[in-house]
Image 1: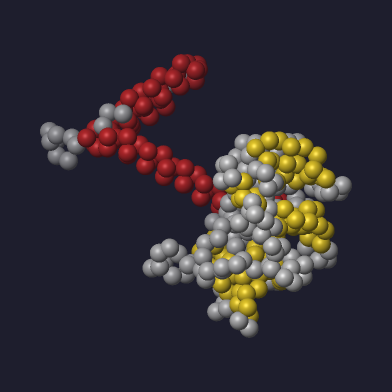
Image 2: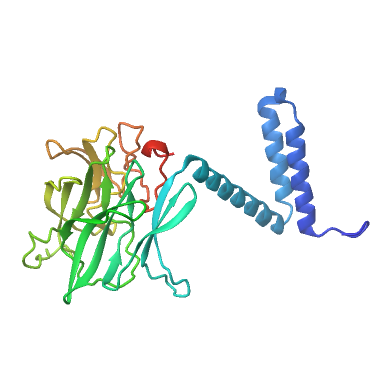
Length: 318
């Protein structure tokens, strides 16, 4: 811009934002709360001047958040895992791989084979060393579904337990996070499903449910020992329209004994895995999670479970 030439609205906003930040930085520490209030108000007014200003400041904030997140990923070596598709020209993306990021470094830990149909979102173990996910493949003209475990580098892939396959699997479909939850000691997996060995005939649907019933199971990952917590549960709650039952990847209490889930009534419930009994009904809610630092779950408030879970050093969430 030459001397004397008029400024554009965007240039005005950038200059005003810089002025606001400079004024805020120049305040003395003794001004306390009033200093922050005046600085925040000045920055808000400067950014509110024009529509491009609002958009520009929001973009700066988003970029700053992304930068901080990326820096935390690198320095704390958080582990995240998610599904992806190798063909970016296909919309929607056809899931055919599992990607793992460790400290910001990304690698493909699993690639679908020609017979693989659906891959559930991977769940990272609390210590950040292993993944668990469900996968459906076709074998001799029949669909087979199982829960798998593997290391985050893609090695040591192992089938843990076989489940009844979905009625209509779609190749490459994005089916969301696997219905699994690692215990905090990295030894057990909690999951909802129908075991193949117990389903020699297709399950009979109830009149009030368009979905087959499922059981809640506890699996010792190394020994393969399976414990049935709830034999049969599952229907669609009519109001609100929620499909039950549901667990999230953060279903376990810090004591590795209790867990929280949404039952087939749409109620959030705490269970004792030793006595295999429900010990507390928290009322209506869905997708409950249990904070590692709390004695009670964050229910009935809702939280969306994701297959991308950041983990800190020694498996501690950030």
